[in-house]
Length: 114
Image (cartoon, rainbow, N blue to C red; front, side):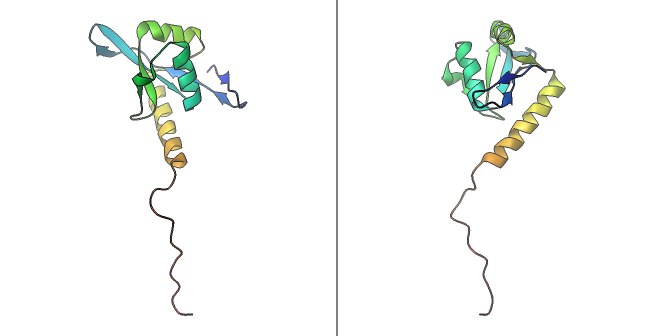
């Protein structure tokens, strides 16, 4: 797989799957990335509106076939359905680990006796 060097020196990849979802007369596909900075950077290069950004099940953009071809020219990696499923599972797992604990401050365990 091709990868890009991020500003922080990490290797990240932007992915596109095969077009298959209809939206009117267009056939759409998904644009995903290893992190949000790279996802939005590619979206900016493709002139995508931030309003088109979606978060479920993982952060992504739905893009048309013409934008898909442009993304590939800019370095996005084409993936098949089973590869996309693996990427989505990994990104969802990363989201869970990075989500701050919700709720009030953790309570110290109660000690019986003293």
